[in-house]
Length: 258
Ligand SMILES: NC(=O)c1ccc[n+]([C@@H]2O[C@H](COP(=O)([O-])OP(=O)(O)OC[C@H]3O[C@@H](n4cnc5c(N)ncnc54)[C@H](OP(=O)(O)O)[C@@H]3O)[C@@H](O)[C@H]2O)c1
Image (cartoon, rainbow, N blue to C red; front, side, top):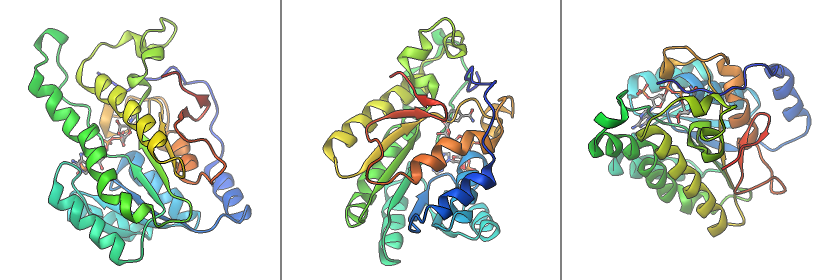
């Protein structure tokens, strides 16, 4: 099963132009943490936000790969396995001790086993939910106290069009052609979790984003979008100011139906 979007025709805005315009707009540097930032969409998000002048924590579960990525990108490494309470608590303590956090990007995610529906078990769902759903709650809860001290806190939950009931039931959309229980329902749950957090914390910008079907390790590089294109909405939502939307579900072309 692949991550898919029918958004293959739109052209990407030039990444360097976008970063330059962000800097030109005078946006204050933010302190950002991205989970799963050692490769693919998370890494590209870290690269872009670092280049835009933000202080970026490159979160990764593997210390060696995470530290190497942070060094290459000019960010700081923090070990964080989103399925592990102790790892998440230690990461939150490290970030708090270093001064705080303005932006949390919950990017780490897994596709789970590729199986026909009839063979998909409750344990298969549990494995995927542990990262894509419970991991986001675990990380958000741990970082909420430090985010609440920020003047303009932002949370970006990296969802998928595969979690959209609107898109997966629209015969015109490619997301409707793929059938799966674990990943799709995990991202639907993430969407609801995003909406509920947004209602509970109206002073924060808390949004779900769909990168679109992007060539990464996640789908054996089958996606038609580049990581630059896929990361675009993540980078944009991470830099949302206090007047930007909250409780929204967005891709790089606009609003995604729930
Ligand atoms: N690619 C697409 O087409 C697409 C489309 C829509 C949405 N998305 C979403 O975008 C996000 C990133 O996808 P991607 O394509 O960049 O995936 P990827 O290439 O598979 O990279 C996933 C990243 O998440 C990390 N990760 C996985 N489990 C983790 C855990 N327990 N703790 C900490 N980090 C963990 C991985 O770390 P390791 O290197 O240690 O494995 C890796 O850095 C995911 O949430 C995915 O669902 C992707």
